[in-house]
Structure formats: structure tokens, C-alpha cells
Image (cartoon, rainbow, N blue to C red; front, side):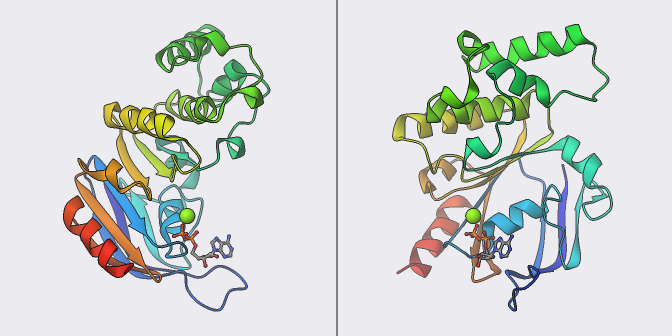
Length: 227
Ligand SMILES: Nc1ncnc2c1ncn2[C@@H]1O[C@H](COP(=O)(O)OP(=O)(O)O)[C@@H](O)[C@H]1O
Ligand SMILES: [Mg+2]
């Protein structure tokens, strides 16, 4: 999808200072990384991409759809994965949670069931279909959160630090899963090694998009900024 961010400044209500200032960028690569210090505006930037945050000035369009007016349509195409899977798991059991995202999509009961079954086996959660979602391990919960998003077949997947709460094994598992996805991905991460094969990496610092380039170059600039 063509992501177009034009003249965006964002200020949260009740806060005097913008958390993003004059951001202009057009993105259409398959793998886009976002890095920067804590509080630099990364989460706000990626939340703009599916209309979770609407910019106080400027505009964000996804394939020509404007997030401030067509948020609902955009959220059907742009999946969003949070850091903490607990904030995303909404139903009691694993299978019910995955099925939840398929409501109101004009699918028959059988179609829904078969999609749920397919994705659960793809993500090795089929043994847990009827288990309580909140009893899964941290890594399995993040898998479930991803399965619940991917079952809806988004064209773009935005992930905000999806491995921050995971151990090394699960971080690698999620990294591999991301590498194998057919979808376009925008990934915010402090795991710089996850970005090696990415097409493009954006660096945020103090509310500004300060650099935009190939992974090695962006990571070096970020390291320099932090020392
Ligand atoms: N919903 C919100 N309301 C008010 N301030 C917020 C909100 N979300 C984030 N902020 C503030 O905006 C700034 C940038 O935050 P964020 O975009 O989360 O940065 P990052 O993801 O890079 O840590 C921070 O100072 C943060 O405290
Ligand atoms: Mg953040």
C-alpha cells in the first residue's frame, strides 16, 4: 500500500508540546523499520497509519484513503499489533479470539470456522484452540494476537515493538514469522538486528523524523545519536 504522510504535526490534548513535528514521508516498500529513543514519537507515528491517532495538522493517506475520514475502511486493510498481547486479546478462548476479528465480514459460519482452523494450525496454536487465552505463555499470546490480526488478511501489518516483552527464543520466532509474511510490514523495534534485511528504516528523535535510509546507515545514525 502507498503510505503518504504529509506535513504532519501532532499534539496530544492537554500537552503543550507536539510529539511529532513536520513529518513528511511516502512509503511503499515491503519492510519498513522505525527506530528511535523512548518518547521520540515512534508509537504516535505508527498509530497514525491506521487512524488510531488522527494528526492535529497535516494528513495521512493509505492508498488514497484519508485516516481522518475513512478510518473504518483503513482498519480493514491495516492490522495493528501492540507490544502487549494482553491488550489485544479480547475473547476467553484462543479460537474465539481469532474468530472475533472475522465478525461482520460477510462470511458464513463455515467459512469463519475454516479460516480460524487454518490460521491456528499455521501458527501452531491448534492444540490450544479451546484453551483459555490468558493462560498461554507470553510467546504464545503474541502468536495468538498476530493470528487474530492475520486471519483478517490485512494488506499492511503495523507492529509496535512486538518483541519487547518476549525472550530471545520467542523474539526469533516472531522475527522469522515477520520475515515470511506476504504482507507489507511497518515495524517499530529496539531489536536492531531484526531490521538487517529491511528495505528502509526511519529514525525518530525528539518528535522529528531525522533520518530515512538503508538499515545499516539508519542504525549507525541512531547509535551515534544515543552516545
Ligand atoms: N495518549 C497520549 N496522551 C498524551 N501524551 C501521550 C500519549 N501517547 C504518548 N504520549 C506522549 O507523546 C510522546 C511520544 O510518545 P510515543 O509516540 O509513545 O513515543 P515512543 O513510542 O517513541 O516512545 C511521549 O512524551 C509520550 O508521553
Ligand atoms: Mg512506543
